[in-house]
Image 1 (cartoon, rainbow, N blue to C red):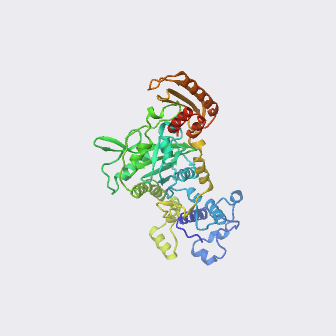
Image 2: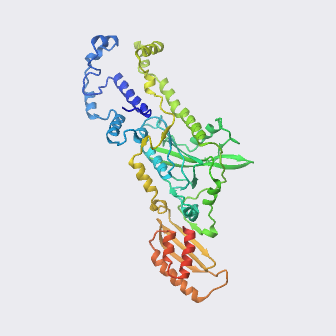
Image 3: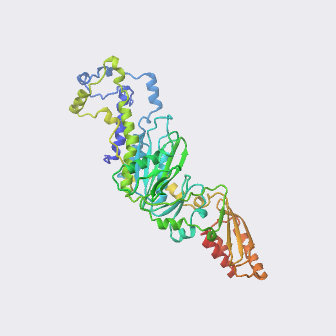
Length: 496
């Protein structure tokens, strides 16, 4: 027996479909009578259902039933599949939740950044597609917190955005997300949010406005009110200076959209600064016509708890989307009020008394069950689909993280060696390597050293063309001589 409270939402939806189908006199099985055979004529008379004794399905209804056999209850079908396929019967398939046609707030309890970004992708892809351009009611709000990592935008250059040698020495993963935007540092001191809706409802200011209203209107203590600037960043002000606490990135595809951002609550700002500090005179100059550069801004923490932030924003989301949609549907004319001229209006007080006497649930409660305000995605409860793990694996691949970088050139100078070196890189692979000799800082300019270094550079070029642009690969290409290893070590410290 399924007892987990999250299944109440799904079961209520099935009951809702059942009741609506009965009201429309649609058969729900191969039985030509829509009610149980054990109902006696007296029962039918007491409930005012005498006419249903003589119900026969029309040819059109029969054809519809035969064409859609097994598809009338898509979520019930998923439950059946889950019951048979899931080894651990105590876990719920995330797919059941992802397909629900109502606004949802979800909080991932995972801290693996690859899993969380894959979850975001999965929930977005499974979110019901809009049928009409208006009245979309399947919005999603996902929160997640990652352990330390650096996340770059889909079209960014990691060698330009990040101190990669420090990143690797610190064993902090670099991740390229599937949306645009700039580079961000994550740790357990910030919260990431992702608001999903239809393409037609997309507005890059709408959700950040909701966030600011939720935080400013909460009982949490914040030094100054937060606001949204012209770029759509959430900012605060200290001593008249604007400080950024959240940036955003967006994705629009297949009639849907999402807007996600990183909220700085109690992030390690010192580490953030170190990881994103890249001095050109040390790490070289990156030239690229097609990569997107991050907009550098001064940042600060908001200084509130992640739980307080999530609860405040989730409450405002439910108020705007879930509860607003509920009120609209309850206020819509129902089956009975459409038939006022036929004297079929219901006396609501009498209806409530009858429901209480018979132990029945009112139609409005069936239509709108008390779904959880926040669904926590944790390993003990949910079985993650294979697609999530497949996507997480793809996000870890070097070919995606570095190989997806738009074409660029990387120019470096070493005054001690008297050398300027330039790599041309496309799809993460070296396509050209050029160099020229410059006067060393010590004034040494010996022909013999030049000839030896020329030979070393030529040999390295032959090895490196079509190779991955990786510090270890490049360092290996320069081994064999002391001068070559000096060049290789220098490049390794720059490229990472």
